[in-house]
Image (cartoon, rainbow, N blue to C red):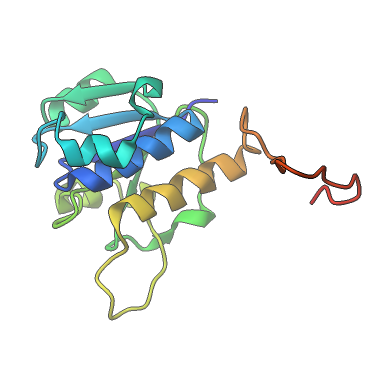
Length: 169
């Protein structure tokens, strides 16, 4: 199974670094659509991603045209403006979950042309939005949950003790 996480014009390096770490620990591919609001070698970006950068499968694109010209599949657009709930959608293998820039989100014309594939994370009406890296984590783990968490370790191990066999929940 292949999950693709797309960030369109991200502006805050710490968010992108956190999202890169999420991609690394889940095996998701990361796609960055330029222009970026930072340099890719930004210390804040590297610090947030810690030592996970060498685990990433990352691609860069010069705008939406370049991205859509090089990628095929089913795209799901996360937006506070969407009417569909993210958890009510069935995500197929090789899908792309797409997130907009922190200050503007995704372009409204893109959302309007793809209404059936626009999804939102429910929140209190008076609030503007969740943090981008939190939204990506919610979306990514919903997709992976639906897929049964393929290739992800579902059981941890204590360092000083051994779990009892009956505690497999």
